[in-house]
Length: 231
Image (cartoon, rainbow, N blue to C red; front, side):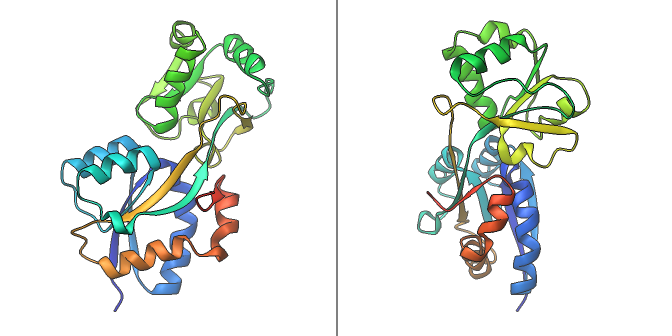
């Protein structure tokens, strides 16, 4: 019998799930209602008792969600990995970001830098600029939002450079992805899915997680900036 699944998701997986869910719906007959927010916000909603059938979250935040007891540990499924990238407005100069030094020069030269406050990549970037000794300099010209697709600020001219997880850069029109952070500075995030202990549709939720790990979907992951599987 076809049912409706409620799935809480971090923004990182927005474009990916937008592509995968219609495939799952056609294959299973089920309907999926997706609710998106920054990963840390989703985790907080889970901590506060928001109900759903499944969730898709970045690894560190999924760990926090698991501590609430709301997610069945046995259901935890690693589905993909992704890294952080840099974007500029289409048609503008692409700075060299291939090494640590060139990346630092690119940040220093930019008139403004956009990143999220609550997203996984934004939290990491705030710590990174502190380690690089650039925190005061970058914060003075930062353009931030709590979450969402931060490269929209680059597309509309409010910021010169955006730093965010690559899957969150890809959906934004009017930008070019310059590339990933230098390997020495990169932060790879594991994306995982899990079923709620009190899921209303546990069997269908388990089917959804199984579908997310089907090898036939690997091309969809790659097209959306992910490495398929746990790596």
